[in-house]
Image 1 (cartoon, rainbow, N blue to C red):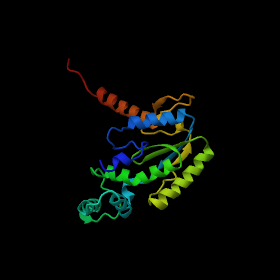
Image 2: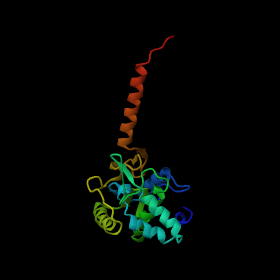
Image 3: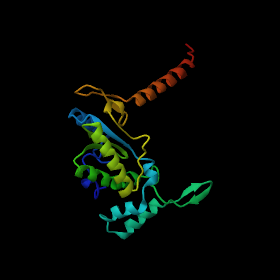
Image 4: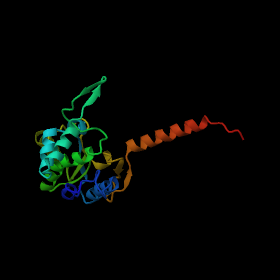
Length: 215
């Protein structure tokens, strides 16, 4: 982390020291308030299952010279999976829930961040949740097409076209939040988050009605 983190983008918020989802949501609000009222919402299909090992290791090796460490990381990536009680070697992806996986994901997606910075885009990325903020639908369509091609050709990742969209930010949630339509947009819970919360409240109330008091 001390080797890689100082060079990561200021627009990258996930799994980094002194960075948080709250900061990412605040940045989203600031970009929209500044007039970038269209969002390119990118969904990376099964990101942690699709990470290309050779591509990732090449990026790690740019900063890490110790071959013992590189071998250890490679072995971590290739640690087998158990399927039907039998070990199966991992050909791509990173171990789900592994302590090193978030950092490795940031190292790979830093290539996307640098490309977005090179193009002068306003964006927020929290792990594999990526949004780019632009001023028109037309610009958003161009960004969607060019970034999808970049991700698939350079990073060998797949953009889920069915879940990705170019839309108004108040119609697309980000990290559980959305924005109002006002010129000075306000933060609000995304509809999906509100629905989950209401479902949780109903479950709690339903359990509570089943408890009887003895006194």
